[in-house]
Structures are given as C-alpha cells and as structure tokens.
Length: 208
Image 1: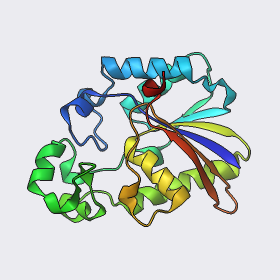
Image 2: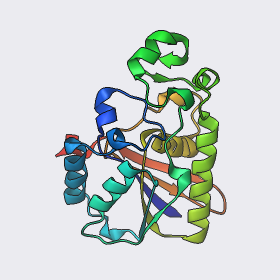
Image 3: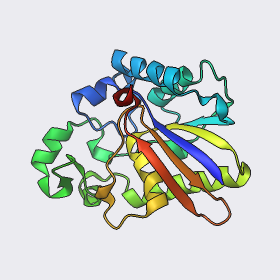
C-alpha cells in the first residue's frame, strides 16, 4: 500500500471573491496573506519529513503551498498535471453566487456547489473525467512507489475526486470539497486498485 496525504492549497484572493478558479493561473488565484499563513501554520503543525516525496499540481497556488510546507522537510518535489483542479470551462473566473442564481437546477443549494449536470451548460470538465485522471495518478504512483508515503498538494475538487476513488459514493455530493490546507489520507494499492480513506481533517487551523 502507498499512503497519499492529499493537501488542498491555502486561501487565494479568488476564494475570497467567491470565484470559480478552475484551472485559472493568474494573480488572483495565488495565495493571499491568509493563505500564506495557513500554509505556514500547517508546516509548523504537520511535519511532512516522514514522507518520501512531494507531488503537486503545477498551478501557482499549489506550488506556493508546497514550497512552504517543504521548507523544513526538503522532500524531492515533482509536478503532475493530473492533479490540476477541475476545469469549469466557460465558468472559470465567474462568481459562484451569480452562477447559482442563474442556473439553480445544476447546483446543490446546501453546498452552493455544482452538480455533475453542470457540465453541459459550462462546457467544463466532467466529474468522471477528474476522478479518472486522479485514479490514474494514484495507480501510477503506487505501482512505481509501493509502500511509500507521498504528500500531494492539490485542489479542492481534486481531493474530493481522490476520496471518490476510495469510497465510490452513490451520491457524489455526499463528499463536500475540503477546506484550505486540509489533509486527507488515502491508502492505495497499485496492483489491485483497492483504496482506503482514513480520514479528513477539513482545516488544520480548526484543531489548533
């Protein structure tokens, strides 16, 4: 078994503005002061030096978070495009609140987040596509690195997709996206594809 520790990046200006960030990689999608502090807080309370390597999404917000987390541990770092955030297509950069008002039928109104059916309207990436690429990532890494512990710095929906690989929920909305700088542990067997979701700490700041 390979243990993956999925970590969502710190807060960004786009998070505060309520925008669909998707695969945007502009100044407003970089860590703000709170996001930088969140990453530093996680670094100080979650020592990643036990792990063998760190793999991150190539977007700036995940690169920044990974660099801060790795300041002390100095793990080998690589980047993998399969860890990118879901692309919301035409909706990238738009305000989530406005989209929910305009297209209420494709939103979960408790989570204020899109349902899988959003994809036809936004021409975005489907939930199944993200789950497939995250599963491929875990399969490859687990096959190549059996029994390793791997820190993965990625995005909210991407973490949700990894959890979906493990638990295969009948209702995908039963798994909300985790909070900024949350940690989600998933063990994955590269040969059998068996996965175990050990738990989610939705935001380290809440436990300190």
